[in-house]
Amino acid sequence: MAESTTGLVPGSVLREESETLMFTYFQVSIKVFLLKERITVKKNDVKVILNAVKWVLFWMALALIFNGFIYYIYGHEKGVEFLAGYLIELSLSIDNLFVFITIFTSFGLTEHAQHRVLRWGIICAIIMRFFFIFFGIKLVHSFEWILYVFGAILIISGIRMYGKEKESKNPHEKLVVKGLKRVMPMTEGFEGEKFFVKKNRIIYATPLFAVLLIIESSDILFAIDSVPAVFSVSTDLLIVYSSNIFAILGLRQLYFILLHLHDRFSCVKYGVATILIFTGLKMLGSIMNYHIDNLLSIAIIVGVLAVSIIASIVVSMVRDKKQSQK
Image (tube, rainbow, N blue to C red; front, side, top):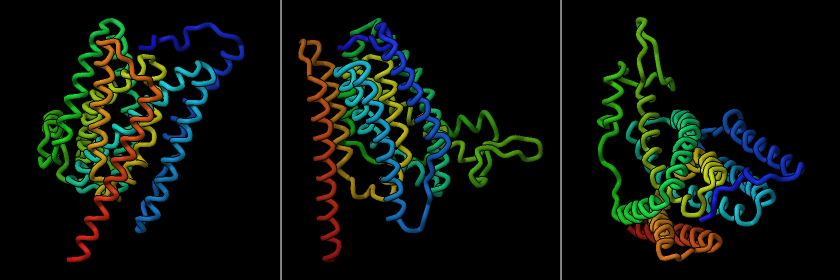
């Protein structure tokens, strides 16, 4: 396992300037997400998808440029660690987005409202992931055996995902919503796209705020799998956190692609489950001093995703053909 060395090795003035430029680039990327990114909801699904695809490619390009900074400043090994971490986080996020689709559908949210919830959900995730990763790395460095526990958790999660069915429980009945109603009053229906409204000098939460809390609680549960998975390639705070954040920044746009095409990606969850099991085995392999190279890990992750997407397309085409013959 690579030691955490990023930013601790004294370098030349050129290196210091490069690091300053890299961190500035990282901050600007987040600001671009906060200020400029938009989804235009149109009646034409093709235009919506194409618009979202452009943004997904934009965020991927930004991640690769940042990867170039890592590679130039810290060397080949750190560059590969970032790319592997980014791909792991991005691929595992897909299953979480399917959960979001289920939640939003249950509440009957419009696409504009979904856009607002996702935006604030990602902002909160950027903050919470830092603390989750920071204390996770502290834990790993203090008790290295915890990696084996994480590995076992990932394998179990992957196996369970193979048999996981869509949740049928009404999100309104979730513990999060019940807890919110005990803390403060909540309106019966939505109030446009507002999280809170004031009526008769009393502040009410709206169901939209309840959805946001559910999304955040889902992301915390998701992070229990995704963050330890990235630990399988690096325990460097900069590498783990930045790869997580760049993967998260593009999720809102990726969500809208899956929203319109999720019926055609039925096999992707099995690819995600396979990646979870693989990363878990990669962690446990260190018990027997068996190390899987990160470049090989990247190839396996990309290959598994590609196979699952191709399988989904084939299954979708066969299903459409059968339906057309009826």
